[in-house]
Image (cartoon, rainbow, N blue to C red; front, side):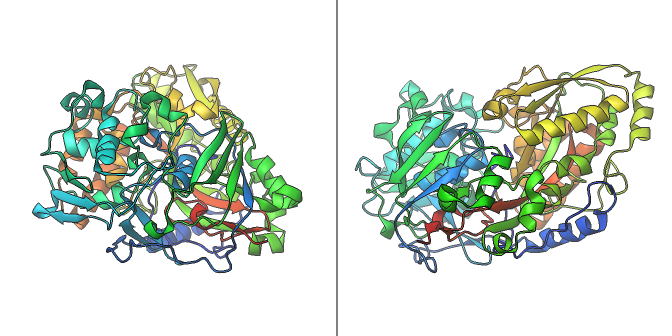
Length: 600
């Protein structure tokens, strides 16, 4: 993605109609100019968070309501910066993969989003969002009638058993692990509890039960009220048993959504065409207005923005997936009244970009604190979309995450948004770190390259020797996700997978989850943090749990500091003039791809 691991979160924030949200443009030279506006926007983000509703069978019944003015036919062009890191649903945990998954995959549940961005969990391949029993420890799903994959094979409960069980296989390394852990054990212990279908065994019926062809029953040892939301994630979407090619599935998946892959040239292009086996009567959310999508890769944000703003030829029918209006093109886009009113969308995304400290290599907290204090957050976020691309982050929690506290500011971001050099220098001197060499890794995209210069220059000013290491953006998270990655510092972006801090702290800061491909990028393994995560996860009272997560957030930053918050993200996208149905999605935090059509 243009913002790489904006973990495809379920942020319960209000969707924004084209041009409706005012984002204050700030001058690049005044480091303090946006602090009051940022505070106001954080409060707006908090007020925009709304509870996710649970839909019934009627809400889960298709076809989806027509999009106003929609027409059928034509092919849309999609500009992408890089290739998709994975096509296997079990491996998808990034935003561009989520947008693609909305077109070609389906799961048990999905989100239905109204015109105000309010989200309701409804049944997707299931008849409803799920029926709970045994105090929330047992969840039962019933499949809709006449479901088929792109090959015409009937979809049954055995396919969902396969979908769940294959997640335990060793070749599944990059996807979410919530379901596996809920079923079979915390941290990485779930892999020990069950070795995967490759061994020829099934999960026991007291964990996962398929009593007939249409019924799937999950059994947990503790109430799991968030299961319907969790199952909307791409990582839990269907992989039919008959066509599961295991490791090879990542390059040639089978569709059950409205579109299927007809041609794929890795690193270059992908062509989607209509999946004739998709039945709109079974789908209450998705549409199939277009004949297909031509996805063209290797277009950075600047290229995408220039081409779409010019609106010539093919570009009239073109769109972004996770691209952003480039910083260099901001004034041109903002100055084009017609484009701003009719061809752009904006929204407050749920992500926090943070600088991770590899704690296997940077063991001294004083050094981590010094680096945190020195970071030029204001300049760094403006390199990724300017004032339209984000705002200075004061916390490892996003303003859209329940429990966020804008007053918690351990690194004095409000008063020193471009870093407190003197305070950082003092810690460097106290620790004897002058001249210490550190490897800073960054992705080879224009915004990350510019940010690398800003960050390395700031850290050199406080006396550190920074060795920059550039990495291919297409494999960025695979590289930094290795436990022995060889890097000291690297940025990642994270947002909640649904509106709860329980989807932030366990995957990112739980030391029991450290393994290649996991999301604990800093390798924090603190006994208190680990035990608190386990304790809080068992709290069933939402308010009590939210307060506990907020307290843990403060402990992590003050007492451990495994990662320094830099900026929160916002989304600002532009589209060709013939692209219809565009709106910001509070589910994906980008354009809602389920409703796109060509106007003529």
